[in-house]
Length: 97
Image (tube, rainbow, N blue to C red; front, side, top):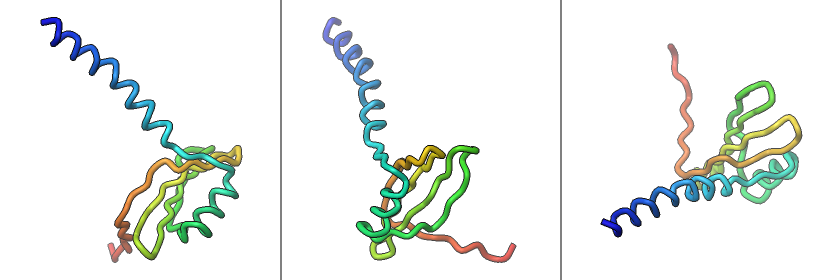
């Protein structure tokens, strides 16, 4: 009984730590430096962008050579953060409606 209680409590208290660990994976920098790094160091091109709210712009950057993609969130204060990354991007061209 005590062992099951101890195991349950250890899992319960480790869940917030996992959430915090994921949030610290976000990489932020000055927007100009971020764009320079994405373009020159990674060879990525901006494929799209859209407003999230009046103070936040989301961009999708894609590397043509391997299809890696990066979502960058830009703030009006001049800071940009990489909020998601992945592989195998496939752009979809809208067809006639």
